[in-house]
Length: 232
Image (cartoon, rainbow, N blue to C red):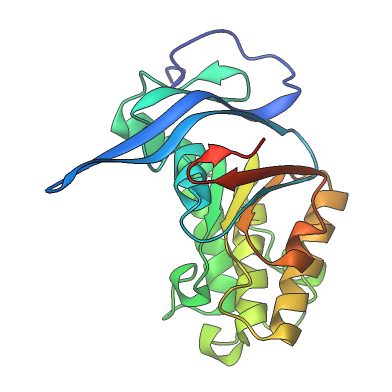
């Protein structure tokens, strides 16, 4: 199988993701809108990296660029030391299945609602070509004996916890989460914060876009964004 990357040779990378002079622009009927301007940052291969800032600061756009969902207008993205600029859409999708896990802010958007808890984990494993580890993962997630439950039987926090579990099932190189606590009550948000801290302790790099001060407090690496640029 051909290597999907287009540049360089993979090494034991100090950083799992890197952005270099990234800009994102959108054309609108009223003219060109700049969402992100000249952002360079490094995501370490361990710990929690937080993109912090108010709504409209560009953090969610940067998360989509980091997750290879969106191509930047300018600059480049490196994944595990290799460039992604020339990858086809198909190759980018393949990397999102096997290397990158993205958790959305709405718990229901992260899971397959008609499948059981266990089947969601099995589907995630299968999509990435990994062996299923349902019981092991549910124990790690603090959700033992829920494999046969419907997703709707879980609280919002438990659903987000399961979403991070699906990332573990895929054995992704990095987990990215967009405002994962914003749709949750305080108790449910606590479950998500605990899950991310557990992932970091297990050596899984996590990148989060958030303005939740409790989540920001977990950061090992923090980047503050204002008006689409890194704050001085």
